[in-house]
Length: 264
Image (cartoon, rainbow, N blue to C red):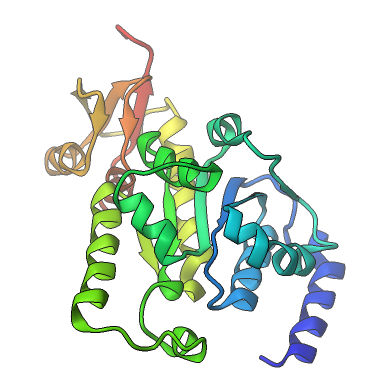
């Protein structure tokens, strides 16, 4: 999409946003901007899509993300409702209120830190602790994988060992529970995850299904699969952590994850 056409489309969407469902009622998504620059315009378009689907956005940046991407992304969002930039060092409270964390511009450095469980800034803390909190973490991989975007920046090379190391880090992030997508699928993946997050908070059992009790402190996909085989919904303690993979399995199998007070 050319710059002039993109600007025109965004202006039309700005004016129509309230009538298109941009009411902020669907949930809150923290958007982490790291130092990747592949697909910056497309990243902004995905964030606009989330706003138009009814989500509220909170933007947080790594140091390089603030330097390279913040101005362009916030400029693209200017005039749209229901978004703001998080003040520095407020990530913990923000994560507690958020329903998901999305990373449209993922750098190799940020990915490597996540794979090594390093959280030395707000961006790293938000990504890592979203997983510890059992909240959906959606990573767009265009900034780390070979492709036209990286080639255009002069980073289309790299030997097999180097590219393999990047893929290993992506596999580690997936193993931790992150969802890795192409940038053009970011908004759709976040939207698919959040209705399930709402279902996890509900305590209303589905009619006609049994109750399977789960005493685990961390609810994984295996517990969900066992409930699905028995035709049950899964009941766990209110303080249990539900992994993103468990959420995906619950959605796929039609299992409700019901959190109940201790001893109930």
